[in-house]
Length: 222
Image (cartoon, rainbow, N blue to C red; front, side, top):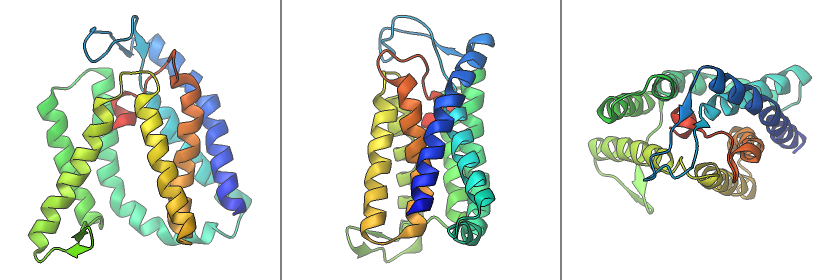
């Protein structure tokens, strides 16, 4: 439990510190979200790339946990092979979002990258093999459902990042739900995987809440 509190608190504090730095960097290089009075209803340009602050907060929180040598560090080391297998998928999604934040990408290019990342995630070990308690009779069906699940969830968050606090709030609520479920089911590894993200989102929400001074950007929302 101390590890969970440590990860959550450290990631939240880091997000509070790093988000203004990323915001300043985005302003300096003109990486801002321009209003269009359609989906993007803010009245003036807002810096994006908030996902960089969240990513850095989560990674640094894990690093500090390993440095202070809590017993849960062993669980993190045990899970490292899975993390490394999923790293290519994560890199494709995060990299695609970051490029889109900086120079802009056509929707079909982002979708192609998302499909590629979903396939990499499948080979990395992320499989949806059942739905509502019913197992799929075919591995092909499971493969297709897994790809659809990843792509649809990814874009569901991405499409709502443009209204103050909405995408971050929805993501925070989802993370909290998973965290509570993990704790109630005594799934400590899952809790360790979720709590830093929860803390980082909470810290980031301080700057993303109305009136937002920074958005997640595609690197964060994807």
